[in-house]
Length: 582
Ligand SMILES: Nc1ncnc2c1ncn2[C@@H]1O[C@H](COP(=O)(O)OP(=O)(O)O)[C@@H](O)[C@H]1O
Ligand SMILES: [Mg+2]
Image (tube, rainbow, N blue to C red; front, side):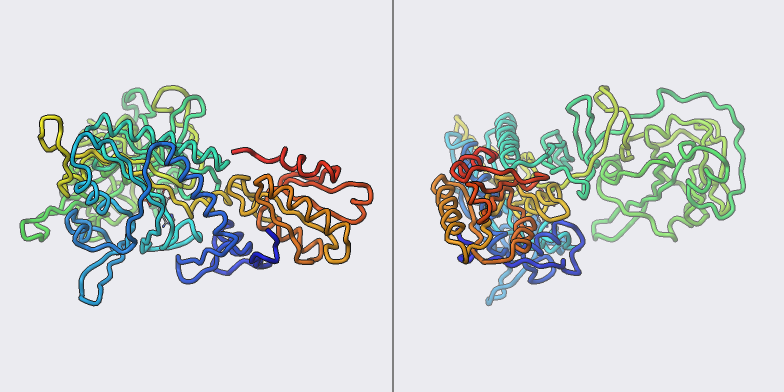
């Protein structure tokens, strides 16, 4: 490819709305162009990367036995009404009407449509298992589209759906996809972790997120350096930090803590470690009558150690909170505790509240908590003596680095990641809702067991850049670079020797199937180099009249500190030897 036959458009300055580095670099390198909030044009340079990402995904999906089809972007609402998602999903789901005022949606994902296909096409156990996938445009009306293509509203996803006879079969399909995902991200040259994720109402342990490791990632990945334990922060189990409850040594005392409404301030004032304090969080659950009106509200007091954070996903698994909860209003708090937020605690509430203590809190003694009176805290608090045992003891906090690993093999560490893929066992959630059955050997209809498997195709671009960049620009892994090699002649127009050598090298590399671009734009060397460094082409060869007089060209890998002088005759072999074979 000659640069003049392609479209290159680089910018010196990043757009003002770009918050993260990958977004800035993608815009500056001319990979994307913003059209609206969370909506981007994929420019020719960016599309080359997308096509490479898709090719790797397609190849590995096919190899794993999945079968490609293509489902529509705009889908009739009827199917989404069958599963209830048309009403249940929030404003993320884009609903549109056609000219006949019929409801449609723009697909955020395709469980309904694929299940509709499966219930019509897969009638016998002989046709199972099956795994169908497509690579298609998605739309999610995200509340806060941001980070460029990493959280867009319109984006490209690969989504696959498996259909099996039973749970055992579904577990095998899941396993095949898990392995395929590992191959996909290995081939892309990305550093990633597969982490266990929450399965929500479905239960079980068949949900993993594939997270590209990057300091700027939105997600916290918990892992154990001494074992293979890895889970996202929502799921990672926080074990109790105390083996047993120590005997009480202090007397209960109401202590003035004027204007100290946070655990940190109270610990400071009292000269105690933060870990001796207990934080109170107030939730509420509404019980509705048949008409859907709130008949009764229960107020819950959740207790975590002062230096810990509440984990809302875990809280949502507590009996009584499973059906959904909200944070209590200030009025509800005052009615139950007789006190404003900031000085709340489990001792002497005005009205009954359900007390849920984190596992560690339940084992603490002589601790500090709010006194349900402004400007006062209790010290020397002990379960059983000063207040009843908690109603519920549960893991309701986020783990922190240094916590013991739940597998007992060392301590946990935390790093940041970007979720680029998700494999998920669905069970019969959709097949039951849509009556997708097959006939077993005895002719009896059985529900199909399903799994779904997503990869954020366009998000991968952002994630790869967050992981691989320097002060000059992007550093693409070979397998997904828009071009693998840039041939950069100095004096292409003026020097026959340079032009001939550059064309020969370009043609030789191209004939070997290497994705090479020849920069024939006639730019000054500085501008030319800056462009390819910004765009992130991983290999570069510079040809100059002076070098060619000695029969030399200069090779430089994008991460190399210095160029290497190479014989012009052997330049193609040399470059080829430097390529990362995926
Ligand atoms: N708004 C978005 N923009 C870009 N990619 C997205 C977006 N939402 C999801 N993805 C990608 O699609 C993959 C599958 O989506 P899914 O797991 O259903 O989404 P979520 O984790 O947001 O519920 C995710 O792992 C992610 O890589
Ligand atoms: Mg996900």
